Length: 142
Image 1 (cartoon, helix red, strand yellow):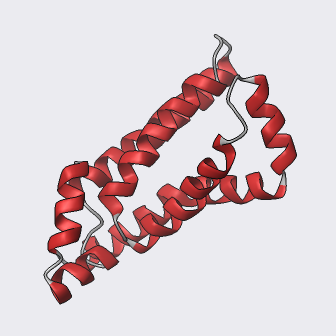
Image 2 (spheres, rainbow, N blue to C red):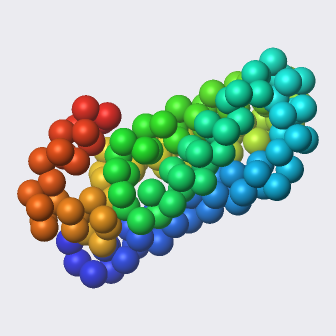
């Protein structure tokens, strides 16, 4: 893997999670409004802290290239599930947002398939410590 490819993987990881990180922070700041929105869509409020953890924590993990494949599985599933729960209806705005979620899921699936690249914590741990535990965890997620 050359330096341009390694750098491109870093940029792609960061760009793929920017939306989720800012959305997770917004959910913290606007917590009560998000509880109301979830309730209106039939989603129990106890899921909100888990969503925040996934969006913020998962974004940081993927941006750093840590447990990338494992985390990407959950981010892809979350993108599709959120699309079905919150963007039902046959209006153009809902379709556009649903397709955005599907596109995000596709990007995360590509991370599951291809991994985080050479400039990542996953790669560093794997080369430094043998990474058997991480490899087993990532292979079970893929």
